[in-house]
Length: 352
Image (tube, rainbow, N blue to C red):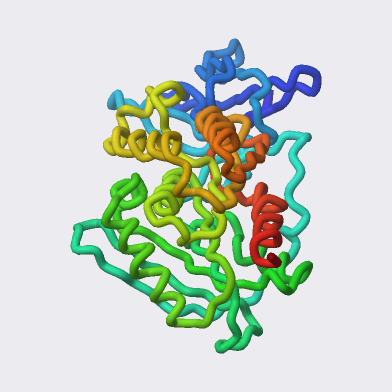
């Protein structure tokens, strides 16, 4: 039995096999997926190795780590030593297993030229809460040409891990009228800023976006793109400041509700997030005229709260759609759902 992951072609079960040293041993496989009946614990074999077997996951690709027991009683999360495939993430590399059903996006073969960047920063007076980043103009575009504006939370991660610039370049090659400027934003303290923070929202809407619009000419409706807490922060801003955005793409938004997300109570700003989401459920008039595209992974915990929000918005007359992909809560999943979700929304809003 060779080290590394193997997939049963009949059942889809995944077996992980590793060797262990004298002073350490594998404990379990770690992955960020909702409960699908998996027991990720490693067990010893008669050959002196360790194996863990899980049922077919609700995903076409799996990002994972191994939890190891150290000699001093501590645990360490590390990539699979028997799998050379790694995928980068905001918290470090993970091992990657792409199942036979996985199909990457068609546009990944295209690489874009460097965009022209202008730094932008707005302070709030609250420690850890700031709006900072870069305003990007697409390569080859004239500086005085008015272009639509796309505002992106966790912008550097979207650029590096989800290849947003490459996707927008490909989209431009298909539909030149969708060429746009991009405001890539990165918060100071992410949890504090993106968890429905009033100071952050005020600085974003009243200062950062207007500043970007003075730095380069823009036209049309402003569109927002964000994932997880970044998506929540955009929804909160749209609700608090009606008319700021013409459309939002919210990927795996952290739209916590006690019914689905009681396990998130350990999050420091859980109550504030729930209050903001409840306000959207109760008073949708602030979102009137806004187009909202939600995406989520079939394998992630945020799936149910995103489904519920999409249904509630539709009931209240807000234009909202939900696209579901077979993945979890990660930037590759969000990258793979950019097309056609983001492209279709931009075409509808900006062509109009």
